[in-house]
Length: 366
Image 1 (tube, rainbow, N blue to C red):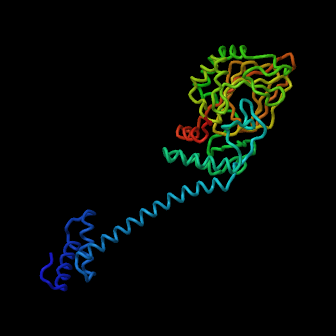
Image 2: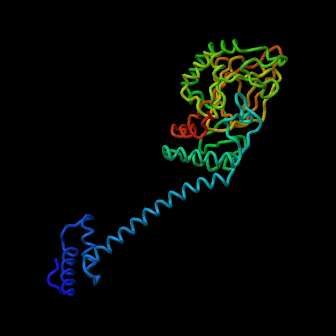
Image 3: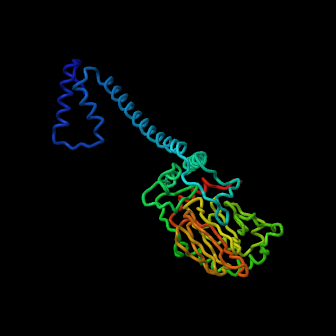
């Protein structure tokens, strides 16, 4: 308290009180800081206490506003950098040709395009997702949207992996994925082999090309390569699913099927003797393509990333088709077609939060 009306006496009393509290042996903590600061300021300020308190309040408010403005600027610059990077850089790597079961060159209404326009669209959709949900767990997806290091741009890349639309960085990559990585879905498909084979018998034809395509079959991807899709670019094909109830039932039981994503396809793939698909890459490394062998005659081969493999009837083969791959049927006409049932699954190392975000970004058009 102040004693007397003299300003000098008041300052002296304040100095004594301050020296006793700050220099003595008493206990004090952070909760005492406002009072201590106010008392200490009296030794330097010639104006009355109410005016000093108002000045401190204004100073504290100004510092708080400055801190909040700084945080806002940091967040704004981060979001602007994401959009600017998307506009400045195009999607690296173009799809080469087409792949079996809904390849990138057969782009439908819901499929993303190529180049800066595509990357800008990916970034805008990703920001919309983050506003609705969160940025948590989105590190790799954000880098992918910004066009971060990918095949042909990072260390240790041999140019054999060139996803045309989306490269998810830091994702373990190999041309062939172990069966155990998707054990549940592999075992379910293999146990459904008899039912899926019966479904193919119900929709198959002579594949001579001399007659119009039967209902449900897509135009040939290349000479001698036909397909019937139950899911195309993440969209169910109801009429084909009704004609193949065993295959559809198996698809509904899968845990990692990309059923709501434009990268997701499922259906029968037929390759006639003498047909060949080569020099092709899938659109993304975020998926694994599962091949269930239905009819595998001699002379059929699959080479992915320079590694040869062969199908086996009733067994699944997991392929990362973002690697350069070649498919060929070198058998004789008497051997008949090679038939596999292909399903696009999530790469086992894509986390749940990343799958949800990519499903939002690459959702099929209604």
